[in-house]
Image 1 (cartoon, rainbow, N blue to C red):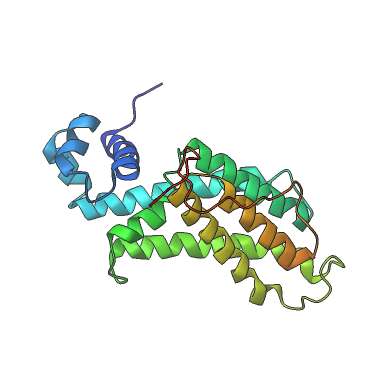
Image 2: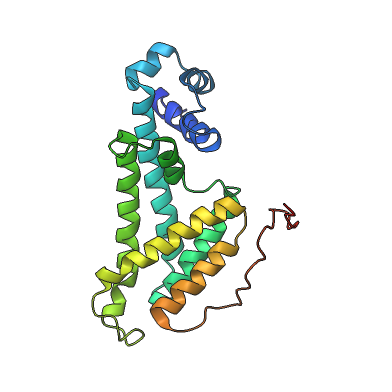
Length: 214
C-alpha cells in the first residue's frame, strides 16, 4: 500500500496532535517534523496553520459522522436508535479516554464566533442536529409518542441533551452523565424508563471515585 501523500500526512498528524494536545498548544514546526515533510511542502498545501485547522475539522467531521452512522445502522425503531445513540456515546468517550468532542474543544480555543474554525464547528453541529432530527422523524406517525405533532420543533432538545452529556462526561471523565442523559431523553420522548438503572453519583467524586473533601 502506498504511503499517504504529503498533504494527507499533514492532516493525519494534525488530527492526532490538535486533538490530543490542543490546537493552540501545537505548533506548525511539530506538525512538519512528525509528518516528515519540508516546510515548503507544508506551506504549498496550507498557507497557514488555520488552513490546516480547517482541513483537520473537515476530516474529523467526515470520520465522526461515519462512526455515528455505522453505530445507528442496525436499529430501526426510534426507541432502539436512541438507545444505540447513547451506547455509541459511551463507547466513543471510553475509546477517546474522555478527551471529548474535537469541535467543542476547538470552539473553546477560538472564542470569536466569526472565526473560520468556528464556522466548521457550527457546520458539524448542524449536521448532528439534522441527524438527530432524522432519528426522531418516525415519531410523527408512531403511536409511541402521540402528543408530538412536529418533531422538527422538538428534535433540538435531544441535541442539547447529547451535547450536555458529552461536555459533562469529558469534565468528570466518567460515563454517568451519558446514563443520565439517556434517562432524560427516554423520559422526554417516550414516557418510559430507560433500559437498565441509572444511579446518580455523589458530588465531588474524582475519576477514581475518591471523595473531594475541599
